[in-house]
Amino acid sequence: MDESIAAQPETESPSRGRAVAAALCLILAAILTVPASFSYWGQRTINDGQRYVDTVGPLVDSPEVQAAIATKVTDAIESQVNVEALLNQVFADIIKSRPRLQALVGPLSGAVNGLIETQVRAFIASDAFAEFWVAANTRAQEALVRLLKGDTSGAVSVQGGALVLDLSDVIDQVKQRLVDRGLTIVQHAPPIPAANQEIVLLEAPQLKQVRTIYAIANPVAKWLLVVVALMYLGALLLSRRRPRMTIIIGAALAANALLVALLLSISRQLFVNQLSGTVFGPASTVFFNQLFSYLERGQHVMLWLGVILAFVGWFTSSTKFGTATRTTVSSGLESVGASLADGPAAATGRWVAPNAVWLRIVIGVLGLITLLWGNQASDPRLFWSVVLVVVLLAALQVLVGTGKAASPVEPPESKVDRPDTGGGNPPDEATAPIRP
Image (cartoon, rainbow, N blue to C red; front, side):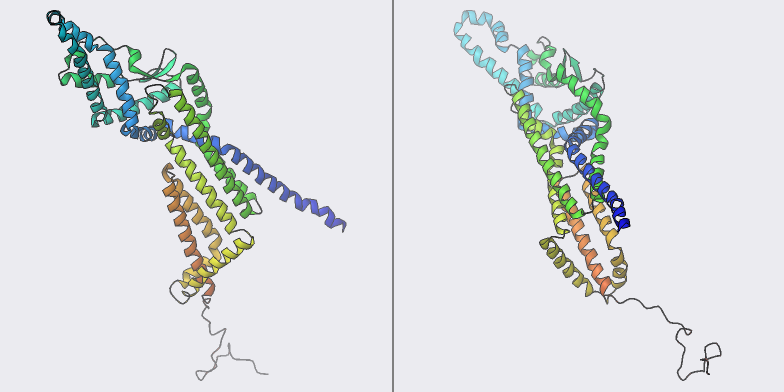
């Protein structure tokens, strides 16, 4: 009795330590899921030039973005080309002799300004501007990374204490387009001030905060999400009640996905409010949605993945309905496999049956690789990953049924094991029975 009492703490201590380790992994993973999601999005979107261009590239086709850029460029050109003043100067002598012609100056200036706006919008909607947009954003991404590392030169730079995007190339191309169409007055207009050719992206205090966050988060952003995934896996492996832990992990992922959605909604509203009343106000929502499209896509995948894991945990649990459902499905699939026991699948089934556990793990890993391959996780990719896993698991269970129903292969018996007692040659001395 004394020995059993003394041994009880020794056997419970590893189990308690294992439970504490599993709970610690789960808590840390749940806390770090949202920061890991945002940091991974930022690291991939900003540092990866191709991903950045793929993200902002479609904005060139947005009517709201086109209208905002066209308004900015048109205002910049018209601010330096006072059409009404030029017409008054050209027709000054004629207006003196015929004052009624003064009434034509307003409509004529309006027509010229309308021509400027039409040509600007035509250029913004052209293929030439689309090519320019991709090239400009490629340069902007490279310059932005340099800027975050402390270099203040390039198309995106610090001027006057703010982070600005230079539109001078766009304005120059539009002006040349107007000159080619006969509106030579823009060619002789005074230079446009630099302030009218720039878009302020971040004020100086905001820029300092962004640099600080980038310096701290960038070294760990790429691997933080992997660490979180490993902690979730560790919590699952350390848990003694893995179906229940699977449900908890699924619930944690779903809750974090909803939290990411809430934070994106709040950030979107703050972003829209900051740009409201400006020329880019109407395009603010489109720009925000496109910039965070990869993160929002990942949020959807995280939510559905949490729901799927919770279902898997319930399906594999020892609850009444979980057990009944699992037994029904497994029995049905194995009965299909049993009907194949006399066919060519028998040999494969005999091998699969004793190796089913680790084969299920391989199938799960294959589905995860399919989902995350190329960092392009999306709802359709998740759907087809689940379909692949379900189909393979079903085929595996069918083969398990085949292996259980197939009769084992008997090894050929030798003459030593089973001597011939028929009407053939008599047994030799080595195999003849000893008679008393």
